[in-house]
Length: 319
Image (cartoon, rainbow, N blue to C red; front, side, top):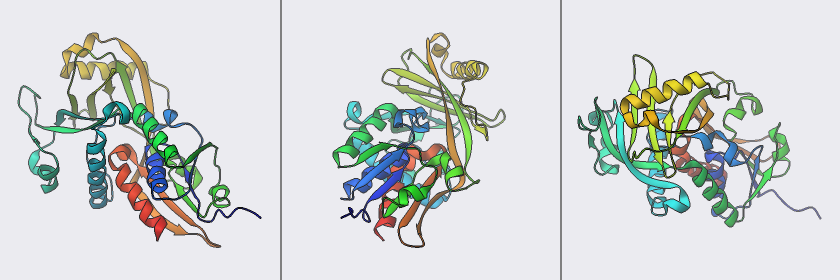
């Protein structure tokens, strides 16, 4: 007699959105499998600078709620940074003002204040936020998922019908892959390039935006390295690091933190953010039975909203 898999869930994709979603579903008692073309360490999520901040993604009101739910989780995980990869770190969000953040900011971010001239030359906010070491965090998510009874299968999916044939519920967390997999031209790449250097002693993060030049420059200190960024190249598909771009990133960072100028380069990273005008987070009941839930299009905010979106998926699956 064939095994009944109508109550099974298959999550397609193993970036931070896919892993977090699969984990939340597995810990709710469901039998969950992840189908992934590549391991988490080779996804766009592994390249992310990974500073939690309520970035402007749509739908904005819902995204703010998803972000705050995720913040609560990261605050708890930061108690075990070596295990989870999550630390609470202080730094400056440049070109941000307290009066533009809304009432949530003071309520949820203790110590949030305007930055001083010594901390940042322009207008900015001093904040203590989750900063996530993504290779460590992705590994922790996968191990916790496996402990919850989940399984990970290396599988390239070219048609979601393959997954629907094996599970009653399929969750599409394919990010940029959704462009082809579900024929959604609204999702597009925004290329980000990073430079990884030895940390010359920087302990605080910094994000600085130059509206005239159209650049965002950032420095994120991780336990064994310093991440320098970055770029936001819309509709650019190249995943090869450009040496000239890397040099400009280091130059911009050195203007903000001069000690970076002599730091030894450890490597280069390129990731394609899966940007969409609005996150697609919705449920479809398929003709002939079965449920398909979409959870993609988070752009560069995947880490920020991952846990909130995963809980929405759980609600949608449970309907």
